[in-house]
Image (cartoon, rainbow, N blue to C red; front, side, top):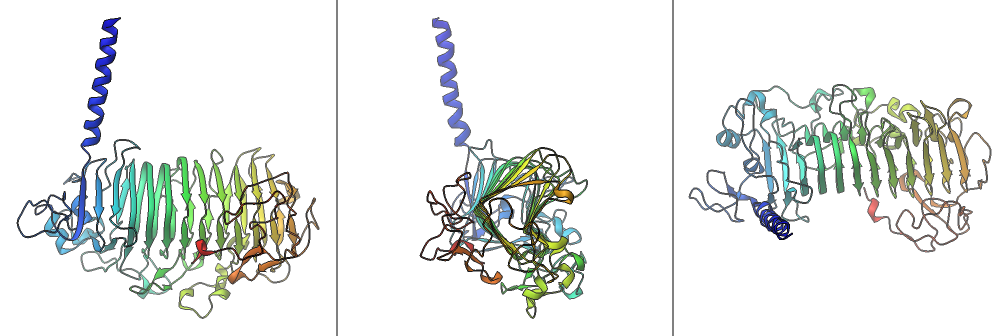
Length: 554
């Protein structure tokens, strides 16, 4: 017994001894605009470079911490998994330059392959509790990491797990879009070997990556995508803005076979904003220009995935004014789920939301004003878009698909309007699937894009193949089906039903007030305000005073 106790005691001592050693190896490195190269500074002190070599001072670029690497000249990262890299406010060029050639050599930074002169992937942390962290020293003055000379990315998470990126601005300094077809002057210069300009393709590229957190990032103005990421597992994205990227905002397709980008685990997005995908920024101004869509050879989805699994959660998202679909998870293969809560979708030129398999949309506002060429006529942002881009695929506000059988999509306490063919459209590849509409406002006051009839409220395919249950809804001005189930069919009397300024709160006297069915209950509304026992129908609970809309500013 004593011998056994001795073994246990020794094991406990060994564990206690090893654990601090594992965590103690983590170091903090610093980047400053007045820092030096890795030959001049250790990176281990938050201090300027003062002239002599091998000082305890900061590096001058994130590329010093994550130098370019190649198969014929592998370079190790200068930070290790679990370390923290703190970047001071300022502007840092990422990509091919004379400074990069001097630091890393002409093999790793060759003008003929300048797109490859980019930081290598962030090293994985030892476990989710000890991630590798790359962060700005200040979230109110985020450091700008800007890509140049056609850099393929600014930061890579290829094969990186247990990583946190926070308080960073990622962008480039050009208004070009790769392969922009409407006007050659707007296309990025890809004549490699010469100066191709201050542009970069993508902000963050990621694949085969798990347990990653992106927090307080501003990703904008890239020539292709803000984020290109696939084969992810258990990612968390908080307070991230992705704006005006030339092809797409968040692109989940890595290319190749459409099953080669599938994700797994829990993918959580809180306060995600994606806007003006399929457009770019008029650098150095931040105005949006050169918008284009599929009919001009472009793309323009805000958030889109290829064939995928995983459980997706979107809370307080604001996805608006993208030149194609807003949120496109239509290729979720049915093995996972999608949940959308307290989110707003508006002004996307295709569908506002496309989901597949077991799913729910709760306390959300969907404004399907998808006729871009009319809304943006006479503005520089309209770019090359044509009337054919309006309300792509007939522009139903919410599209629900079922790739398998006997699954449920539930929409509860939402306010949905639009000018596409319909408000909620469902289809199935399997059998026995169902949509439940509970305490929603389906506001069909706007005619569909053809202008010859009202938009429909719900359509479940030929012979209504996808059955629907109606529970306590308010339905107004739609075609098909009369007044379904126990619905109230009156004008919801919203504060502002105009598309451009749509305010879904009910006005005094609205028939939505205190009329929700008690069969389906949620505790709060779109703004997080508590709902009373006798709740109002729709996304916003009735209140005599105006509710703040500040979280949904453009």
